[in-house]
Image 1 (cartoon, rainbow, N blue to C red):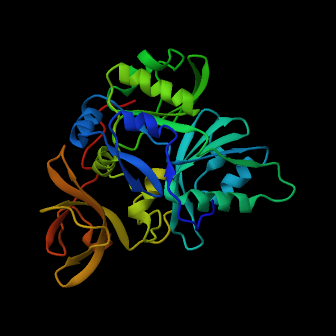
Image 2 (image 1 turned 90 degrees about the vertical axis):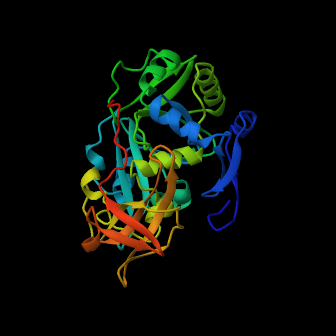
Length: 350
C-alpha cells in the first residue's frame, strides 16, 4: 500500500475492542476505539488510577546493523550517538527547512539494534527517509513492524504497581523514565519502555498480537479499563504534549513547537510559539485564526473540552510577542487566555 493511496488500517485486536464495547472512529488513517461507552470515566481512571491503551497505530521500525546509528543520525535531530543500550530518547525528524516532520521515541534495544516509534500519520514518510539514507555498502536493515506487532500502553499513577503485580516480577523494581528492558510474560519475550505522553506515569509494551491480547485480558481481569482515543487526547492536551496531527502540521521548528530545550536539540527559527490556551466557550476547530485586536497573531490547533478540568483547553500557534501567560486573545469570537504549560502536572514520578 503506497503512501498516496487512501487506505484504512485496523488494529490487530479490533475484535477484542469490539467485544469490550468500543465505538470506532477514523484517525490518521486508522480505525481506532474512540471510547468504550463513557470517555469521561475512562479519563478519570487514567488520571486517578490506571488504564490500558492500545497504541498500535503508532509506527514501529527496527533499525539494525553496524551502520544503524548512521541511519538514525541522518534523519533525526539530537545526539543519538550518546544513546546507551537499555535507554530511550525522544527527538524529532526535521526537513530541509527546519520543520518538524515526525515526533519519535528511539530505544536502543541492543548494541546495534534500535526501535523507532513515531506518529501514525508520518509512518511512510519517515520510513522512506530512513531507507533513502542507506548506502550500498552499509550494513543497515530497516524493518517496518507496525502491522505485525502491537504496542500496548499502561498509563496512570498506579501503572508501576499494576505492571509489577500483573505483568512480571522481571521488571526492575524501579525502572526509570526513558529506560527500556525485556522481560518474560508467560514465556513470551516482551519489550517494555518506561514512557507516557498523558502526563502520568506509564509503560509501553511492544509484543506480538497474541501476547498483546493476553496482556490486555490480564490487566482487565485485574480491574483496569481500556482507554479510548477521546480520553487519551484529553490527557495529552492537558499535559501540553504536541502531536504531529494537528499541532505541527503547519510546519514548526523545534523552538516554535517549544521542544528544543526539552529535547536538547537545536532550536531553529523563532518568532512564534505553540502556546497553551484556556478558552471561554466551546471548542473551536483546528486552523481557527487567533487575533489580538484587529491583528492576526496565530491559529488554534488542538482544542477540546477537558472533563477533568471542566474547561475548554487547547494548543495554538501564537506570535511570540503575544504568547506570554495572561495575554487575552480572540479565536473567531471565543476569548482565549494564554496560560502556563502544562494544564495538569504529573502526579506520580517514576
